[in-house]
Amino acid sequence: MDANETTRKDLSSLKIPEGARSFQKGPKRKLWLGLGIAAGLLVTFFLLRSAAKPTEVVLAEAAQPAGGEGSAVLNASGYVTPRRRATVAAKITGRVVEMLVDEGMEVEAGQVLARLDDSDARARLVSAEADAKVADAQVPDARAALSMADLEFQRVSSLHRAGFASDNERDRARTAYDSARARLDSAQEALKAARARESVARQDLDNCTVRAPFGGIAVSKDAQVGEMVSPVSAGGGFTRTGIATIVDMASLEIEVDVNESFIAKVRPGQRVEAVLDAYPDWKIPAFVRTVIPTADRQKATVKVRISFGALDPRILPDMGVKVTFLADAPPVGAPRAAATVPSEAVWEEDGRRYVFVLKEGRLSRREVTLGERRGMDVDVLSGCAPGDRLVIKDLAGLKDGMRAIEKR
Image (cartoon, rainbow, N blue to C red):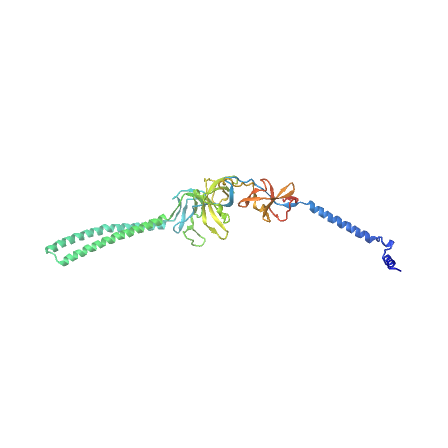
């Protein structure tokens, strides 16, 4: 037997019988087949469902840019504050016997706001006036005595020169003259002291009347008749330290805190547009009065004071206000912004900046060129137009062409 025939016999021994080639039929085969078909259908269902469900996104609309002179460069918020505001207090401690001011009342400089009990002050003034009268009456008497002593000294001196008076008599006359002059000087000084005490007593009486330091509006009434008031806190919570609070309405201005990162965009004299929270449709012309030359290290802000172009009775102290700092006319040939978009709508990748625009249910990724920042917004020179609906949150997982809907 040759080698080829041996090889054929070996291979024929490996042949599978014809009856063994068919799969075994029975309940197990049907069970596994059914489970496989169900799993395939389930996977297909979830794949189709996930592909059909669009992604929910938060949108913002690209705005029309403010062009040329008067465009916004920075937004901030603050409050209306007066430059002149005073809580008027009495200079002395006393009991209020009359209140002549109420909230909302317009007062003038020097107008009486309240009166304190002045009975003790009047008594002291009467006593001081009496002392001044006594001192004043002593001056003529001392002046007359000095005149008499002067005449006597002149007469004795003449007799002494003629040899009819001794040296002792002349010395006594000189001493009497000097004593009379001293008494006159003392009487005059006593009169000055008495008049000074009278002036102090009169000032104490005047201090019982509280007057307005400047004209304005009384915004609070801090004391009532019968209460004790004092220039310093005394007596626990039973003594008031103020009579009323006066605000000079002609000194109203706006105070805002500007982030120090943007303070270079603000300068004195810069035009500002203010909008009161109480009147959102009323745009008030204003301008920067001053930039306070110090920063708040806790908040990293710089305080800016803004003056109104014209005051109005509707503007009240402590009102909330939003301001927009306006730019001057741009240089000739400077690029113009195509739109203004929120800064959070811009996605940066590989040194390029993109926005995702939702149009007809699908996202379109567009490369943009940015211009100047304006607070929380940024100018876009190219890549999108006003009215485009931009995604502003969770940009990292978005793809070009992805289906999406606005999140409600």
